[in-house]
Image (cartoon, rainbow, N blue to C red; front, top):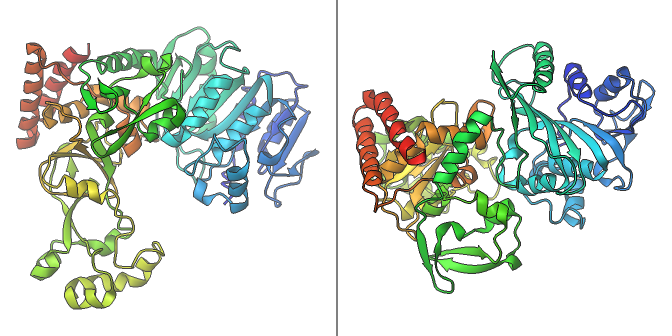
Length: 579
């Protein structure tokens, strides 16, 4: 797959208008496609243009400019440009052409920059920066997802080291490409040659908040707002939010934070540095839990194993940094992953086949009922509580079709019409098994424990975390938070639930968490990094706040009509803890 999503002429014109370089500058279009950027550049008087394209059907001349049939990632690093502009391909690692993937895996330059979850977009951005002159400009239209993806941390680290952003335009839910998800950004990045080089002023940001509108008019308005920001700090009107935000300091999750939100977010993160629990380790003694890092942190912090001491806590492996860089210390705070084990649910790969309706469930025999499990799906989640589970067939312990037919005739009859389609899910899985029984061990270990569920993708304006003390599994469209029994904290789970559904958590997560336009993505890796404020059990006021929040959450669970009133009261109580 080539990851081709062709840019419209109006978007290309807008991006060309962001260029600060002189008309005689040497320009590269690394993935020419249909040549729309070349046409826009020529119309604006730029003539010194070089262009590459990997698709032989598109490598041709455009208004006299030759498009070379060439893989951009295999071009020489030595050729340098004043400007690189375009729309790079978006292809997940598993879908990248095998020839390109092998090249990226074997080439020494890419070894420490990419992993098996990367997108083809990442090397395109990095190689473009490599080929810029100092002071050169990179103007790309790209998806937003890599701003807060764990797997893009090395890309973020690279960009913070080699330059700075001048402009970011975020389109949110507005769909700019017919066959791709919304949530795109246009960025203008300046290569400075290192962290100490270049003038690192704040980033000019314009966000379009509506889902619909004419692109031509929207882009014209954005151009005007970018000019207005030269004399103003903040503007918000008619679906546009315009502001300056500081440069991203490190490779941790990035967010486009307005000055108003920044003040709140900074205070939340600062408050989450209080009341940090300590854990006992055999070789390093008693240490704060936030000083323990896992292998996922290596991606976020760009840390190598030789830079850490390894320790064991319970059944899990952790690491302690031998040196604590200043930027990590300053941005460190208690995160949900320090207190919880977080996972996503089982993937059937074919819910229609495995889901049992209210009419089908009573028809099963006593033996067959043992091969069903209650699964929480996103549709079962209400804010603060799980309404009812959905029941699913779970026969992964049955290893052949003959036994299934004999032991569970009604289940077999239910599944049989889906057999051929079920075979196509994943060739290594038996057709009557779940495709990927993710985190099944986590659910079994915590079957009788209290849990918090949340949909992994939600359009609700307020976060939708739900409590249950029932023995439920989770489905593929929701994540679960279960207490980590290796870390003992006294907070009632309903206090934490009140916090997760609060305005304050909402502000933090909707700014720094992953999005698909207006839909918020509660992925495992993102939830793990979210901040958590524990209480001081020696402080009577904080203990009273904790107990009041628990009581208010209980009130909502018992009576849904109390939600709005009690949630506002919870916000007020949490405000005392945070501010």
